[in-house]
Amino acid sequence: MSDMPRVGPSDPSAVSNGTSALGGPGIDPTDDPRKHLQLKRLRRLWNDCLAVMGLEAMLLIAWSTFQEHRFALGLDFSIYNQGAWLIAHGQLNPWSSIDNYLFVRDHFTLLMWPIAAI
Image 1 (cartoon, helix red, strand yellow):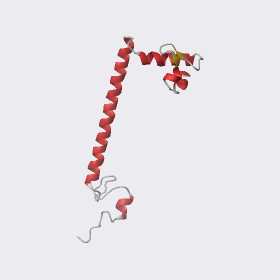
Image 2: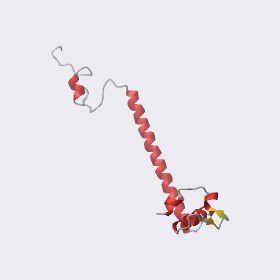
Image 3: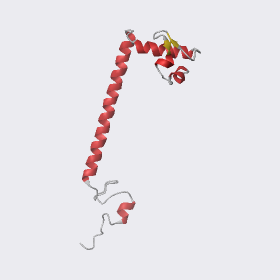
Image 4: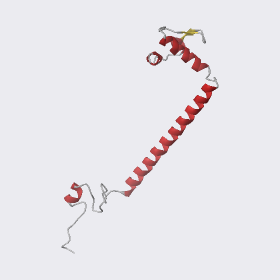
């Protein structure tokens, strides 16, 4: 038994080549198994959150498409669409005919000017 080489955390050759004494890449037998379980749970939670957000995005796109095809976009869309159209056509201080005052005064959305340039 004393003739067998010692392989483990104290053996520098086992750590230097990226393998552990158990033969798995990057798995240290001295690590706490609770850490691995916690990382596994966090990864599962992250994947679940991404799946829910993806499903929510698909439902939102489907609902928006349905509303657009039925011409039921609502008042907010008409206000923003008119403001973006007027900005895109050179009127940098658009007047909203829907609300009867300046677009900037009602909806302080400075992002509309760069979006309208597109």
